Length: 463
Ligand SMILES: [Zn+2]
Ligand SMILES: [Zn+2]
Ligand SMILES: [Zn+2]
Image 1 (cartoon, protein in one colour):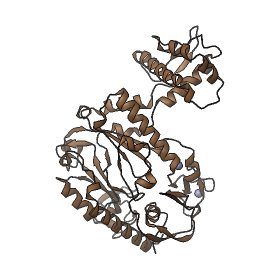
Image 2 (tube, rainbow, N blue to C red):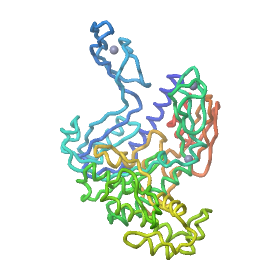
Image 3 (cartoon, rainbow, N blue to C red):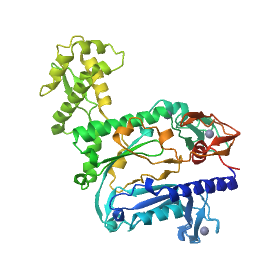
Image 4 (cartoon, helix red, strand yellow):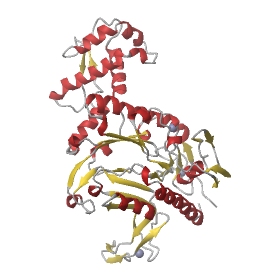
């Protein structure tokens, strides 16, 4: 895209975002103890620094590189525009920002109009300090990120695409990028990630499971303390604001993440004389009975509602007929794979165990939960990748939440956008009750929300 078109497109998006931040103060959720949070702003453009430094050449002589200047740029520069040196340091982030009050934050959003806004789940005594030690960590909410990206859903093959990073090659294809470009053997790719109802529904199902089954039922967290939101793009966030979790260390959060993802449940069924569950992997001896118990519980849960399972495995009928015997055996301590379940041997028990382990667990983006310094999107802010809002949702509303309708804000008027020629079409997408696309090499007049979505996705520009 020509730089001037890029500039005009960004300027227009920024003006629209600015209007939103000026007029929607009530939609922005101000996090508790705002003065103890670190904020991070992701900007539309890059800031760069050309650091002065000494480099040693092959012959041992030292030369000075860099001019010490800094500036801002639309694209990610690699060469200093002043002195031509390579190795610029560039970033779109401004971190270590602090706000004393709600008005302070709202004023800054309307003034600087960032692409995306984040704040720490942690509380710090000095949130604006540049190093973690100086910040003085003082607890953190427990947060979860459920992202369609991690769920391995088949629709990605339909709507995601890649393009070879080698500008002379430009080979492209659908789905995930290959390891090597089939045309030039290159290894760098640009990827296009899209969203649709299927992947966002899968993310929502995982979110509901995490909320209902794990947080409320297993951990006994009061729903009053759980805050839920749509990320504005590919998933959902859950924040646990119960003060009793604030002090959890990174290791403690890691154990929770392992519990949720069912780590260790890939156990094997042994038939050496007695049919039993034998956990495998990097587990210590004292962990084995607990893991066997957990897998048995997951199997009980699966078998107990076997009527709801839609599959055509040969063991399905047999386990349904002997359901009570199967559950009775698994309830024993240690759990037993009951011989009364006729026609189900070690191989089938293994398949049932694998299925139960899979259905039991949830997929979360683990580092978000375990990294106690991570930042998370501000509820009510706009996601610059889509133009959608980061919506707060109640548990009741989640079941019927429609990201492509409920998170849309720019819903008045229309906008003419240019979709440049590409090797792969812009995939179809839905906004509210209409679907748009696929598009390629065309100029279209779209309702504003659909146009903003394409502009934010970098798939279109304004003339
Ligand atoms: Zn320079
Ligand atoms: Zn290539
Ligand atoms: Zn999808």
